[in-house]
Length: 409
Image (tube, rainbow, N blue to C red; front, side, top):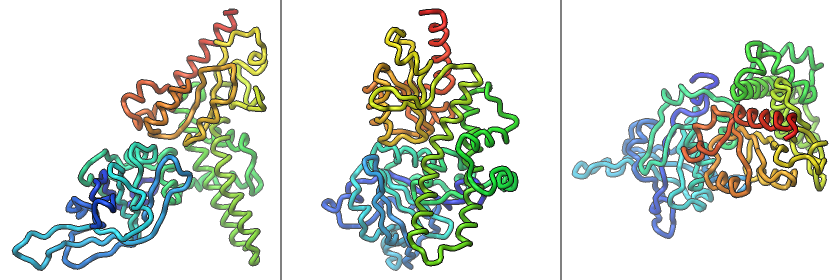
């Protein structure tokens, strides 16, 4: 098991597309996942003795904010083990659970063996973003029989910003830290968290071989990865200190502390991404305004060349650009559509991998251009890749418009 790699969290993964006989109680009551023989590569040889695995069942789709979760067992064994006249069959039975009742034929199933020999059984809605993301994470496709990724293959996959987000959606905390910078952060920031601009600037300063005028896609991902790891390092230290102090049986105080941790994580990552995008613009002398008010008190993340030009009705509308910035999209991308009404064709930057075709088709229909760092383009389908833009493309687009603006066009 290597720190910082998928093998830190999974011993092996099997994936397939569910058939009707596996998923639909009206079709079959067998409670069994078919084609199980290949599971011996991660679960070990099946025998006549039933081996039960404690299992967390999860059903996930794009429409619900929270997954459907349930606990139960998966039972692994050979049927007809003591019948020499008939060939034994590997069987994987699942106990009745709420998650499987949500499943339909065509959904994706992922059987993930954890390091503690428990199993995570995840079912994702057909064509969903989270389904695409898990297929990318584990390196599998839409197989009708189990595709297997063993520990050796998984061990070669590093856990980085986008994959970390996917793993944590499964309820698995990702443990990453950079203790080399901990003492420096504690000294600089007085044993607490600075504001996000200060922390982003500090994260950039620790990457002495990354320059703002280098490839903007690579620079942006490097800055975000470094800030995420430094944040988790400092956060872990501060949380442990608070837990050691205790809460003196004050449940309300504990709940407030827990909520503050969660809220800081959610708000910080989006602001960090905005901070680093801003630095890319500053380095290139690109004019912009950040979070300035347009109509109906909306505050787009970035307006180019600026809010004064946006409110100037004589300024050529075709030279205005709006960029929304969201580390992950889900349904929140629709918020961008109501911002900056003078600008029909809007742009949205995200670091989310493998967004579903349904979502990107809807974005196109609503004149929203998705910007994704080029390192993540491979997580999208070939058709989607033909439409996606990266940060290099976006910056060229903005620079061209601002040249036109300076020339009075």
